[in-house]
Image 1: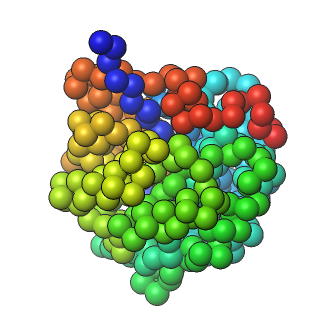
Image 2 (image 1 turned 30 degrees about the vertical axis):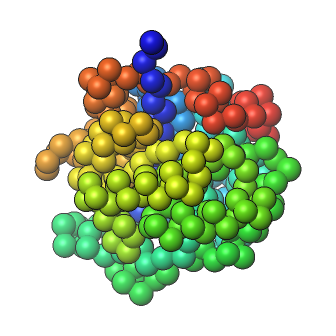
Length: 309
């Protein structure tokens, strides 16, 4: 009997970490593209992308920021490209959606609920910042809501309805699964679903093993065999949550967007390093890592020849 295939997604760089927190975060378009290609070569079938202002590392959802990243990755790798619609909590849904609506990727992320998104505890661990925006950005999360209303979600789904883009549906709590079920019932999102359960963000579900099992049980009850499950463990929870998912029949997401670490007190030097580590966990369980084309088949993606970049 062939070994089960596990999809590795790598979140290469994102808006939830500020550049000062790690010298290894890719900032420029060239750095982000190289990081994505390295992650793919290490075993990631899907690369999840945010873009940044190359001068100060601010989250940047402009077409000009994404275009050179997408072009280089497509030229040099067959990996599945997943563009964020999350952007940053400080952006409007129209700003967040524009790259996906324009470039029509195979996969885009989609947050399934409005929530508190507490990043301010990082201020207790990081004291020095290179850029003026970073400390206020983290401090502001005490009183900032990451807005993903029913109207926002419907806007994203209907805007992309004719593009053939599927979604990495990010669920930070149990209620987000029920919100997804609402949109499935309305026919606005269609199986197979790719559900990314997110654990360990302050404001969402925790990272206890019971939390992981509850998310899986609820998704099983709501969606049966019409979905593929993946997990994201924030910070120090990354590898433990990934190991649980792989053992429970799921897929995994790693990357410097989600965790800066490779071990206790040790910064990861690259996204590829995290991919290699989780690949070792997966293969140690007697499982195999899915190739990009295998991931396309498993998720019924449209193919890299039908994107607009």
